[in-house]
Image 1 (cartoon, rainbow, N blue to C red):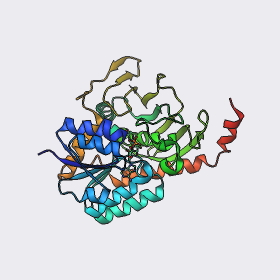
Image 2: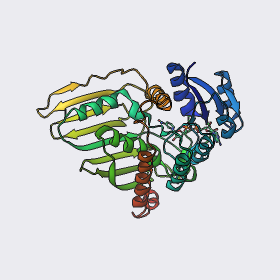
Image 3: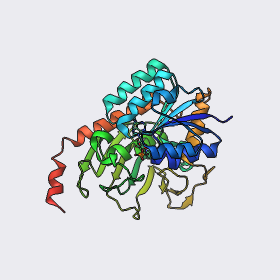
Length: 343
Ligand SMILES: NC(=O)c1ccc[n+]([C@@H]2O[C@H](COP(=O)([O-])OP(=O)(O)OC[C@H]3O[C@@H](n4cnc5c(N)ncnc54)[C@H](O)[C@@H]3O)[C@@H](O)[C@H]2O)c1
């Protein structure tokens, strides 16, 4: 019998990415809770039992782990239900809408002694694993900098599911483009060079859309050993423009990943040496989706295997960086004034 999952919040990412990944892995979608009748219907059509709330779902003996994919401000209560039931939980990024909620979540996870992981699927992307191996093997020499562009278009009426656009409501999302998109980049810095940022600065904009959340941001940071990072995240970049690019610069070369950041496998990675010669990097298991690899590794960790891909303390550090970034940006002059002034 395949590993049994319960899902809290069966919206876009759960339906389009997690459910297909579970099917590909041979895991079972056992149970779903979601207040939306359409979502419950689609879950039932896949053979899942539907429950009124996360506590009832967590009590189902066939649920071996819980995946939380609600809007951000509801992550904490779903994780608390998993903790009460003593079930392992894989929770979507960001951990919570606020640092305080993430800290409270962490206390409950520690008290219950359950396995917790934030669903940073991009550390399971085959191209990103190849990048990490290349860095660790010294193929670019001593790493000096990481540059990330991760952007998309989220207009005021955007919603993949045709429903509520909670992403542009800071009370629910915890912010805007920065809190939605930067967690992936911050986690990738740690994954790719083996050390997290320890210092961070931020500038935000509300430049194109009229909503109350940031629609763009630039972060700069530094790791303990001195690697510099810059991240540009945005909700105001047309989807057809180049918008997913990751570079790792070293003293002896440059790694460039194009169109690898996202929910699917694919994209391209090039290695350029100090003489300028460019070669594509060989990517093992290039077709395996990050969500599938993530589900497999989480189940393996639940069953006593390698847990290194999941770390509550690491994820809490990422939440602290996000909180610092928003507090740093808040010291800048009011960005709304720039929006009112126009280009
Ligand atoms: N890892 C990734 O690449 C990735 C991609 C997209 C979204 N996400 C994250 O996944 C989460 C969900 O995003 P989405 O785009 O799927 O949102 P969505 O709005 O499409 O889906 C959210 C679902 O949660 C349901 N919901 C609301 N209240 C609930 C409750 N109390 N209990 C159970 N379900 C409830 C909604 O009805 C909806 O079906 C967010 O935290 C987001 O940041 C991650």
